[in-house]
Length: 282
Ligand SMILES: Nc1ncnc2c1ncn2[C@@H]1O[C@H](COP(=O)(O)OP(=O)(O)OP(=O)(O)O)[C@@H](O)[C@H]1O
Image (cartoon, rainbow, N blue to C red):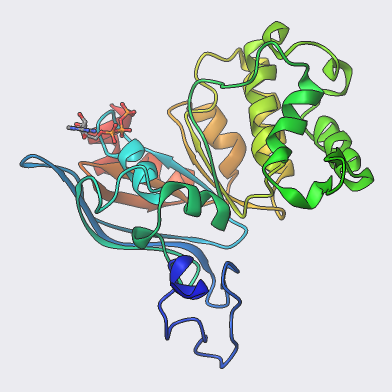
């Protein structure tokens, strides 16, 4: 298999319309979107969990996705990350990372390597290991940060761990076992672990569930500080958290019954009668 196909890129599709050739594994965002879903349908038996879902996220954007239980938010993330796909489910439509990387043709590990990181609702950290070691382990898969002979962390690797500790507000916890952290700190550590893989697109599924108000706002500050270094899609029910991320200008997508019900600023979707009816209540 040639490299372009291995990365899910169409064989003749790795030259952009602008005449630029994109290296295999590089995400081509020359047209704006980093993620593009078109007519995505997922059926479980006769039931459509996603129903011709189309949406796109621009490179650098932080998009919040809200919607009632069962709207298809997790199913959408499962398809983007390759957990659900044509190999194991009844799926149709298009799912592209940038212009050229066809995620429907790729396995879950390949999609992660292509630059998509996913944070599930519950934190999954190595509880017995110190915070620093958790970040080190997260980096281990990536050979760039290890000197080849003795498999020791490079100076640059050290620097990146320190940077991530600062970014996640965990400097004072660096040598504590992760199992002793609070729930909010564990969630921030897991995001730090994902950041060690330098994702281009980060998907977060209900990251503030079970957090105190203070932890929720700390996480909002962390995600806001990541703007510019990666694009993000955040599925969340907590409207204060959504407001802290979307601000007055950010786009919010409302999913219902497997499709986009509304999209726009938080204020505009909150005023939308269909959104009030199906999700926010009167
Ligand atoms: N493997 C499966 N088999 C059958 N039905 C499924 C499967 N996975 C999801 N569903 C159904 O698809 C619909 C969408 O589920 P999904 O978990 O994607 O919704 P959601 O928007 O993430 O909901 P929540 O906010 O509760 O997490 C639900 O009705 C769910 O029961």
